[in-house]
Image 1 (tube, one colour):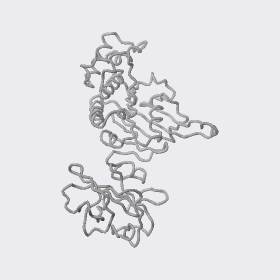
Image 2 (image 1 turned 90 degrees about the horizontal axis):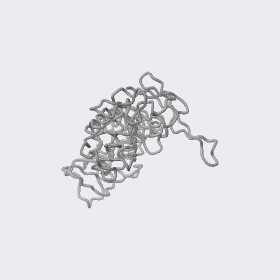
Image 3 (image 1 turned 45 degrees about the horizontal axis):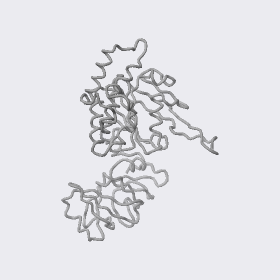
Image 4 (image 1 turned 180 degrees about the horizontal axis):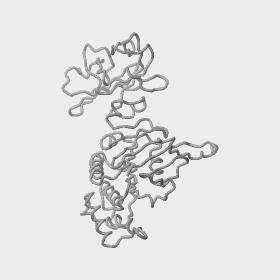
Length: 365
């Protein structure tokens, strides 16, 4: 089931003395979510991603715009009639019911022609439990389960209705790091196995990039960029997207173009720039640095962090907007001793982005 959002906008009235000043949580959102794909709505807290999800499921009515499931306009359809499955951040399991009863509960609310026999309800419940691999937990109460197990129960409860669209609102944020990694892979496997169109809301760019077919990067209620995760990472349209995707984040320097060369301070870090002279922001991915004793960019060395196969060099530069972080292989013998005060780098051209100083839009060179 494809989901089409047309000019979707949500405004909330202001509070206190500013009651007449509305807050635009989602602003003119246009996007078609392909049938059978896993799409991530990604952005910082307050960017409008959960508001968009709540409008899709019907918990919020849009101020403007339309929502289509396939060719059907569901903008004013009640949530229970949209055929969606929703998984919330806090799982929302009934504590007095066991796992089987929690999964079964949505089916007991089917009415009229959709009403199922007891045997069919139990069959669907067992199928959903097998899909998320919790068959052995069916008689336990939620308080007897780990966070990851509770999350899988919540997913099974959403899937048991055989929804047209599955909506996941920050489903992994309450889990520890290792369990989060395991559960996100489980979500990807379940989505692939069922083929259900799935919308996954998260502020964690690593989660979104690892399991989503397409990501929608949002900020202040506005779509910043849409694309396959690696494409968005490699070709950000603006400085916000470049900074939001990547761990460690992109390094940003104040720079300038002079006579076809790119300068950071007085250092000529890259030639062959076919662009008029201008001041720019320079974004360099952490993997875009090469330790080079003859490199043009000299930074003050703060520390070297060794993390298994990779080394992160933490440094500073007067033209850097924030701390400089460079990631490279741990067998690089040019990293120097920790007692060194400075380190020099050369730059990989394909890992360099230029942005306009005022608009922060990407400049192609």
